[in-house]
Amino acid sequence: MKQSLNEKMNKSPLAGLGAVVMAAGLGKRMKSKLAKVLHSVAGRPMVLYAVDLARQLASEHVAVVVGYQGKEVRTAIEASGSHAPVMVVEQTQQLGTGHAVQQARDLFKRLGKTLSTYLILNGDTPLLQPATLQALLRLHQDEQAAVTLLTATPDDPTGYGRVVRGRDGRVQKIVEDRDATGAEKQIHEINVGTYVTDGPFLFDALDKLQPRNAQGEYYLTDIVALAVERGLRVSALAVHEAAEGMGINTREQLAAAEQTIRRRICAHWMQEGVTLRNPATTSIDADVAIGRDTVIHPDVTLEGRTIIGEDCIIRSQTRISDSTLGHRVVVQDHCVIRDSRLEDDAAVGPFAHLRPGAVLRRASKVGNFVEMKKAELGEGSKANHLSYLGDATIGKGVNIGAGTITCNYDGHKKHETVIGDDVFVGSDTQFVAPVTIGKGAVIAAGATITADVPPDTLAIARAPQVNRPGWASRRRALAAESGKSEVRGSRLEVGSVESRMKQPRTSHPVPRTPKGVKTRKRTRG
Ligand code: UD1
Ligand code: CA
Image 1 (cartoon, rainbow, N blue to C red):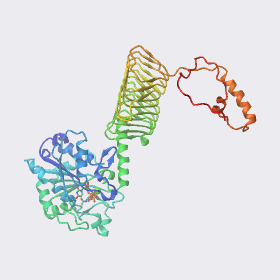
Image 2 (cartoon, rainbow, N blue to C red):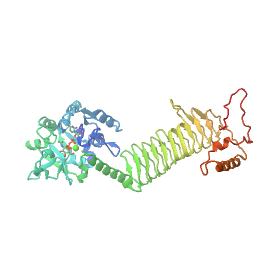
Image 3 (cartoon, rainbow, N blue to C red):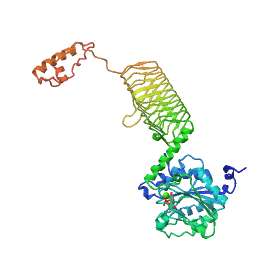
């Protein structure tokens, strides 16, 4: 039986495989302040696609060459969450792709073992698939080549290095677009920028490179002609789909790559049992995970490291970033959920904003126009309408009435609101934090709570109501009178009418001015 690729990979000579990812360039054609390889494709810095492929194939023998914004590139790799470490080397001056690979030589020397084969990847080719690289490595081995390169035949080869073949069909050299003759520019077969090379040959050939070309750079691609000159074998593998070999040099290519990867991601999750009502408008980042039988409606964006459980429903116009949703969670339309955790059976929206640190415990519910930040809503608790809950811990079975606000900020510091289990919060309540509400307490509607409320206590914190019988009809009468004499049809000023009304009887005694307190005399106009 034929050896499977994995079996092969775990044995020599592939055990002696090293990989180099070139990621030092600025990427002028992007016209960006950001290094090209840091531009994101489906939510991940572009360079990580090449780094991950390299890690898969060469495990810890991966060198990444950084330069422009090297610190940031290094940080992006370290933050990628993969356990396999990579070696990073700096190319202080970007003198070309050949010069870039040369920088990695010392790293590999320091490993103290000789690697027989190297895989070299451009940092700007994120659509490459692992199976293609495995096939490239296999071909390299089978043909015992010095160099094996990946080629593609796109409709428009402009900008790429062209693969020049001899009459016998064998690869002779690679000519860069800027150095190509008119005839060479007609060649549609291009160099993808992915190579497998023999170890000893590689570094020897790199020493021989000369910057004799339009850009005055040390071209890695010149090792192909060098191998041919020495009578060594050069092999080439064509990618199945030209798109896979696309290098990202411009924003248009970036957008095209984004589309392709997003399509692949959607296809993957549908294969895994997720329903996407309209994959064309579903945007799922590369690091997102989704459980079976979850239904995602059109125009949903799932970003970062979001994890969604099984049997969830995510309705339209919703964005979820770096959040974890349990099973059977329902997110209605128009929600923004960031850095939050929603346990099983939680329900959110429509129009809810869960900011970093929101935690919705099992079967809790957050309704329309509710904003939460660094706040936990306990099991089965509800905040159904128009509320702000920030820096708050809310227990189980709590009802948060419409229009509740935690006043968490005093202008200098943030303060906490703690609400015990089974508390009932009436509508339009403000909690002036820090404040603690005991288990089972009831807050009467319209309260401004400034002091702790003990358990099982009713708290009322609002001005007593004043009823003035007959007041309204007297006002109407006065208004009619003044309407005749004053500006006809103009809007009534309640204050002016009121000031002319006698103080009526009230259901509550009207507070009198204490003796000795001067009041302003009412002037008559
Ligand atoms: C390169 C190839 C070209 C191929 C194309 C495929 C060379 C000379 N040309 O051209 O044949 O068709 O890729 O996309 O290799 N980099 C460094 N240090 C440098 C220069 C570049 O690390 O000094 C890195 C870049 O960050 C990038 C990669 O190497 O990730 C490729 O460089 P780029 O300038 O994009 O090369 P192309 O002109 O596209
Ligand atoms: Ca490129």
